[in-house]
Length: 364
Image (cartoon, rainbow, N blue to C red; front, side):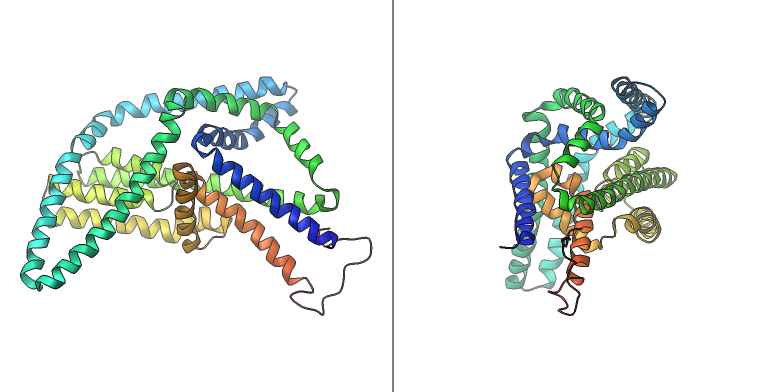
């Protein structure tokens, strides 16, 4: 086998080992994954303080402390504002379920009057099957969330472990990067460094863009639903903004909840159409302006691949997989585009391509 073939097997084997290892420890990934993300986001600020002459351990502690204090202040200010709305929203869930059950019975009765019994039975079996699949998928997500963050570590340990992991990673970030850089095969070093920079730029763009999208959506839906005089409108808008970190989930869940709340609160078509109009405008803004400009141009992923990544992440790693599906897909996209560019410049794609000069490899 040629040296190029051995290198290809090396990288494929390394990727396979990492995936298998992550699958084996997926139940305890959440606090460590959160720590890695926070360290990645906060490390540039630590590096800036270090350039000002502050020791890296002290700079890491200062940046982490400032971040946690800011987070606590936001919660202290925000929670009292929406506490009553959250309680009202949770309290209306049983009424919402009852309303949906009544509407389902009414719709079933109308269909039974219009359709023959055989067709009605087939329709009911189809609907029940699809609902069972959807409920099963949601139950799997919730079970994964509970298993990963409560049963294994629980919320207290999650809150304790994540800051510790974040501090240690920020303190040793440069050392870890240097160690990984020293382990990369020397003939592949320029290529790996270039792709690492591309991956880093993509992730930074995604994090900044998605944070802005979440903030804008939270403000938009919280304001419009409150102006529509929908109970718990502000809390619902905040929920949509938070869940927008998972594409499509926040708007879909918020739309269902808002429709149900409008139906139970007012019970008129005007209220329902108002909610539909609010979400229609919100989706137009998000789909045509916010996500393409703030996120899409940076991760360069087709919406179909985003949906596939979400389902694949949920299937492989549960709730943690859903959270990190899109950034992981963005990283894979960078690597795939690099592989395609290499393939197009290879003799496999075009035999007329000139061979690499002696002493050089295709990875240089």
